[in-house]
Image (cartoon, rainbow, N blue to C red; front, side, top):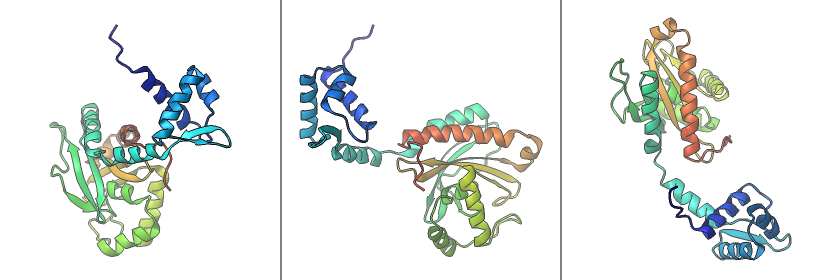
Length: 261
């Protein structure tokens, strides 16, 4: 059996914080002592110490304790250090190994989609290999996913700034049609763009959400359109794995399953 290096007092404090995180109206000293099986005298010292450091606060009238603002300060400091590329990259690798397809991570920057990471498999055709590659928001799967949750006025501003250039015969070039498409993407939780940006290219993208529920990045793959026609379950299978990995990445950067919209 490996040696136990845990500090009992610290371990108890962590358990207290876990209990309080699931008790929005707070818990009393007695309740915390009972649920942690810690003597009241010991629990009092734990709570007093955390209270002195603004980690918990006491409601003197109700005699209950809740989480303090110090935790929010620490949480924001931790979130500011999160590098989504570092977190997401192993998932791109896993997806590429599992499916033998290429996968891409992108974000929205000044109304354009920018590629920040990718993993290609050597056996297959490659779509884009240059990091930093930029593409339009209105006719790419990633752009549609990254834009779908934005407010109407934000979408209008992007349309005014970037325009709705036609790239193929399938490209949406009117604001009304684009907004209808964004509503569909928002409801279904993924975007499929087949031949809208590049002829004969079918791209599939899903959102990655941060701790606030905001769509902060997109996970995407692309395959030749002829494969979509030939392999009937290809799109559904790719949507399934994309959603699975995006959910894991989102959880790792703090998403709790609640949308900001």
